[in-house]
Image (tube, rainbow, N blue to C red; front, side, top):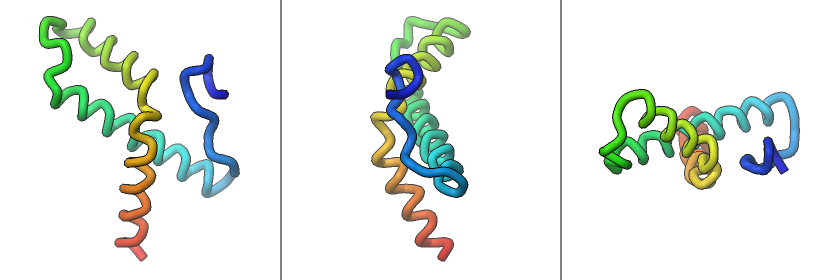
Length: 81
């Protein structure tokens, strides 16, 4: 299991795979953040408190976007090839 049980273990491998893992995680986090922001998530919260809670939710739930992030990165690689 990953950090304090909140993150899944990274994909196996090192080198390029580790870089790809980082890219997948970064994309998954950004996708979740954008989804939360577009949703109008908890509009009663403002400023720093809202950002703190969004950041917490992204830290806890980014893995929910993992499959879609992998798919998007795979599509990008196909276009670059």
